[in-house]
Image 1: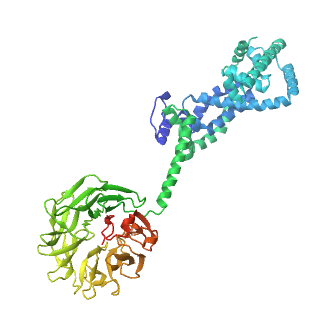
Image 2: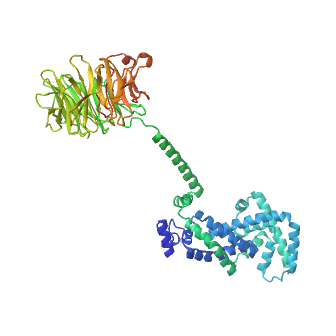
Image 3: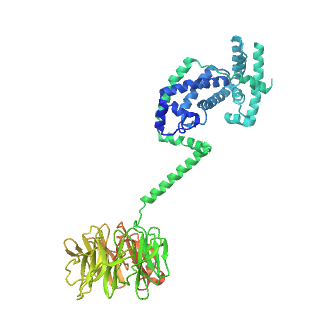
Length: 200
Length: 419
């Protein structure tokens, strides 16, 4: 509360109704008031951001950690854009989604160059990995086996519930191309999941 | 497996995953300095400006992009307006003393000395004489001629609320020009009542007038001091002499200002802004040539400012007291406008065939009724700098007026006493 009062005095605004925070003062304004406030906000939000990325990356922990770091760094730089209309976690997840799509877009270019080698690596990994006993892990493995651009479109449509048009806008593609990509992604997942089931 | 089933399978991944505590701590250690620096930059103007659309969008319900575009447009327009305003301010602004007023052919008009635009305030009168604007620019007084007398009027400078003054007296206006008190409350006029020229002081608000010059004293051409507490006028003696007299505005301490010998004073024309000097013109009985003089109100010392060889009249001291404008008179209808230093030094011609309408309040311009030779145009009411530059015709003469005598303008005033 001390931090809140400090920010309110510094900004000179009045109190409002949204979540008990002030009209001109957003949740982020309070979070950046001092070190303690920032740490509290960070530790409260980071599990949800990390989970968001984990689920959409096919439980790729390294990638999720990398993108979580990118997300918070961007959030600090762009915090003036936070308008307080939503919860800060929702805002963070929006940034995270763009970071993930950017990553997968870059990955798609690499995929096209290294497709044969990647297939071999996947087979090798499958061969060396311990047996998966959890369905969720099978799903994650099948998802990770998809090319990057297919993972992007599935993440946007299946996880986030975006329409084809919205997903196309995020991906920077035409709606028809996105629809086609989504079709290939689902087909790829169907085959990969079946393969994982057979392997198990 | 259907598409819906695939999506449902994928959504099974959407569960909570705990980040490694070491990762959380390490990332916090990385982010904390960034957050601290970001927090310390909060007060930046640019950051504030960039974030301005957000609360506005919230308050108005408009899209943030639209608010940004509107704000940017407003900012650009404000900058453009500021540039134009600054440009207008730094541009030399002539005639900072507000509107001037002219009367001709029975009409009274206000003229914007900057743009030259003219607005008719009164029309349909027989003739309108002796137009004078109050120093504060709010009122204009003028005289009209009726069957057996003259009438004094006051009107707001915007042409509204015209009132008749001194209705209880039947004064007859004389030739000298009325003068306002510095506080714009009263007007001193020369009028003839019962065959005697007297100084009438009229309260413009109440419309009540009172004679200031003593009974039996013939008084001409009043001039109020810069503080308004004293009044100078030409005192006409029974033997025909005409001297310069002084009286307090309460009617006390009537006295002759100086011993001028046989000089015949036309009238006090200009009082220096510091109150020290009264400028006037007087004629020598032997030659009937006029000269410009000034008398020190404190020491009563009289100085002649123009040479005996020229016929000079109608002096006007600039408000900054640095210069004096006057006329070199060739005949009753032919005269040239000159300027000299306040002490009469360095006389120089400003404009041929031009009268002396006095100075602008910033001492930068002279007002003049100019009747040039036909080859130079019809002339008219003009402003001109003392060095003769920036000659500008504000009210052109009608072609028929250019050659007529007397001049077609019946009166003009821009708030300064004029000869």
